Every structure is written in structure tokens, then in C-alpha cells.
Length: 276
Image (cartoon, rainbow, N blue to C red; front, side, top):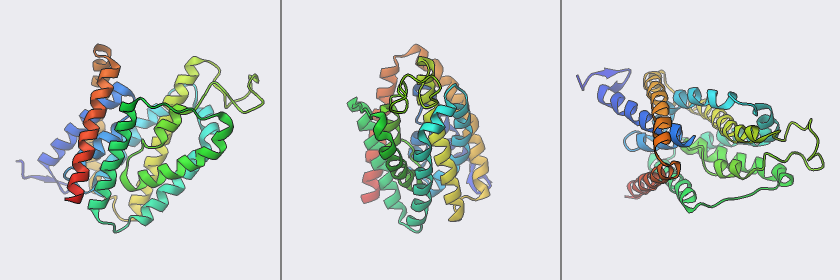
């Protein structure tokens, strides 16, 4: 039975993928992000990064559609971050062209490095603040760099997550701080929180769609990823519900710290394997 294959995947592989996406869903349900980071990191332990990225597409798109559009700040997010999103798409397509034919060990090592950087930043408690007037400069730069990284590794967290967390959504365009019609400014605290969560959702959603297009252009998005992708979506959603329950019983900071420690270990193992 374990040797049976379904669309090119052994039953044991599908079972492991289901378990991985359940764990990744628990993390996302607990801390609000991390589904691509955890799932791609764990799958790349035995699958080529490109194949793991292909499986990732369906779960990450489905779980982020809700996060992107359920809230009060979608207009604010799109108006404020459009240049970041456009630059990210360009960077993703460029990365897809640049890494075509690159040794998978190099991609795995880069993925491991991104995991370590993200986790160390989180554990350090480093916080950044970007003035509204500087966003016109930094948004396209961050978006392009994020596109290059996500296009090469399917990791959507560095540098865009720290950047989004550094924005002051309570302030709008310079000179219109008190203008109630300014759509770039959050009207209340609820909208400020929604702006961060929806900003993350929109960013990951757009990046994953760009990644899917890039993978398909390189012929690395076969129909065989539909089955593991569908299984991963179901178990990820179950994991998200479980993660919320765990978050309600456990300190959010403790839960987040253990997740980040695990990512450091996983990233270091991937780096060691890629250079070994």
C-alpha cells in the first residue's frame, strides 16, 4: 500500500505532505503567518525546491484569499502598497528566469539562509520604523528584492514582513494627516490591525500567483501537484483552526519563540546539506 503512487507521488509522500501542511497551518493559525515558510522548509528536506514550491501554490493561494480580503483595509493596502506589489511581480519573474537550471543544492542553501535570517530577526526582537514620506522610495525596492527571493525560494517573509510591520498605518500622505477622506490612512485601531494582516495576505497572495506563473513558464508546475496541493490545503485549514486553539491556551510569545527556534535549526540543516 505504501508503495502505491497517485499522480507520481507515493502514498507515504502524500501522508508526509499532509502532516507538514497541518503543522504549517498550526503555525499560521497561531501567529498569523508562516505557512509557506514552514511548509517549503520541511518539504525541501526531501523534495527539490522547485517541486516543493509547486505543491505550495494551491494551499498558499487558498489560505491567503480569505486573509487578504476579509477586513476593513483592502483599499488602504492596495493604495498604499501598489508600487511594492508591482515591483515584487517584476522581481519574481526575473528570479524565475535567472534560476532556471541552477543547481538545486544552491536553491536549497539559499532557502535555508532565508529561514535563518527571518527567524533570527524575529528572535532578536528587532523593530524598524519607516516614515510615510520614505515609503515611495522603499516600497518598490523592498518589493523587487522580495520578488527575487520569493521567486527563487518560495519564501515570502524576508524582507517584506519586517517592512510591513514597520509602516505607520495611522498616518496617511504627508500634508493630509487630518484629512478624513485620505484612503491611505487607517481611520481607527481596528483598521490599523486589519491593514497589517491584510497587507501580509495580499503580498503573499500576489507573490504566490507570480511564483506560479514563473514555475509554469519553466515547465515546473505540472498537473501532478494538484493532488498534494489539495491535500495540503485541507490539512492546513485544519491546522489553522488547531493553531488558534493552541494560541488561546498558550502564551503567544512562547509559541512564536519555539516556532522561530525550529526554523533556525531547519535552516542551518538545509545550509549544511547544501554545502556538504
